[in-house]
Length: 164
Ligand code: FES
Image 1 (spheres, rainbow, N blue to C red):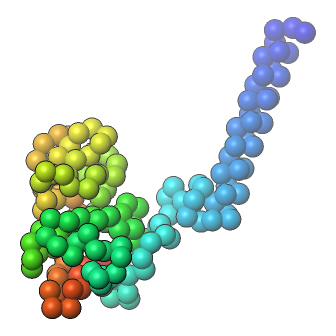
Image 2: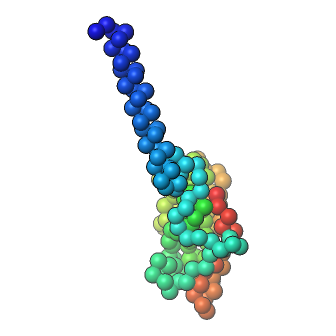
Image 3: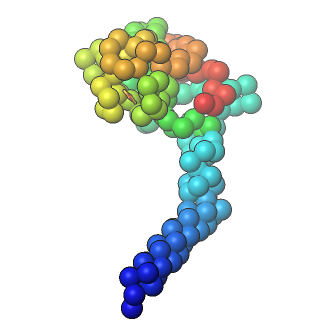
C-alpha cells in the first residue's frame, strides 16, 4: 500500500468517525431537546417552572428549601429556561437574595457561598452575597432577581424569571 493510499484511508476513517459522532449528538438532541446539540444552545427544560408572570414561590417548610428557613443558609435551584441554577441566600430574617449562578466572566457555575463570598471555580472570581464582583477576571455582577420573604407564611417569592 502506498503512503498516499494509507493517508486517504486514514482520512476517510476519520471523516466517517466524525460524521458518526455528529449523528449521535443530533440523535440525542432529537430524543431529548435539553441535551445533545440543541441542548448546547437551547433553553434548559429541567427544574421548576415559573408561573406565567415569571415568578416562583418556595414554601420554606418543604424539604428542598429548609436550608433557607433560617438566616445564613443557601441553596441552588434549577429553574426552567435558565442554563445555570439560581442561588438563593437567606441573608437575614427578612432578607433573601436570588442570583444566577452563571459567572459573568465565561459562564461557569459559581459555588454556593462560603465565608461571605461566592467563588467561581474556573478562574477564581469572587462575588459578595449581593452578587457584586469583588476580585478576579469577572467585572460584572451576577444576575440578580427580585425576591422577598414572607416570614409569617415562610414563603420566598422570586420574580423576573424570564430565562437567561
Ligand atoms: S468563568 Fe468564572 S472566573 Fe472565569
